[in-house]
Image (tube, rainbow, N blue to C red; front, side):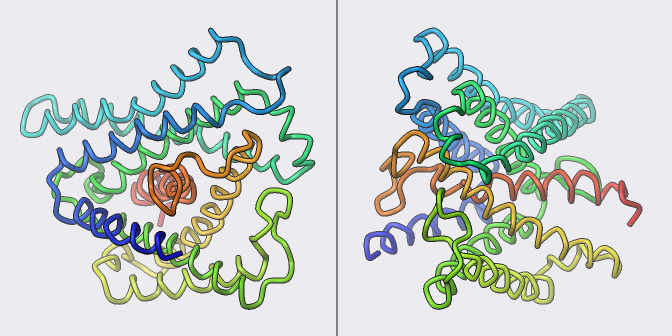
Length: 312
């Protein structure tokens, strides 16, 4: 625990700097590095201990190519939009960025729905889940996550376009509610946990912990909405109700993201995705809860709700 806390301090400080103060190119390079590390870590999770399901050497390279292309694809349009700022090509590149981000998040929604299968007959799924399905999951989820990162940070919902000066408050909000949900689940689970949430995947998670994490995250959301510029998104009471509903769904998705990553690690018979972060494991161990959260907020809140898709 001590090592975990010590290593978490520079991570948090670095994250705050990148979100609030870093120029676009620093933000871009930082998450590009995270994306590359996540590709490497997924390479260890698409295989398992069943020799009958081990892909041939050529297929291994193909799976990693698919994951790499999907993961790195969002970085190309967002860089093109940034380079086209102030030029006649900005509108065209902005439209390309938005449409491609929406497309990958749309398909990622279905892979997340498919991932709900892990809650049924988990022991059997550990061995029959083919590497190509894991590779497809990794590709869509990673692509949607990094597209969501850039959308939440630099997409101005009111203008419906890329904005280099866009407020980072929504991005910080997602990090905070996910962190509060995780911390709340840990402490409430230790204090009151009795009913296992998914014993075959993560024996330490409990229903009481989930409810405690949900309660903690909602308190965090109320504080954010009332005491930060986040309330600029609440143009009316309907929009506020929708935002809180989105927050609750985001918290539940963050828990599911954590469990899904735990399933992949158990399937591959590894404890952590890597040991690159002392006391925390790997990059995927830190972003597993954030992956569906950013995708959900970016797609359903930024792209659809703020563009009056739901007529709010």
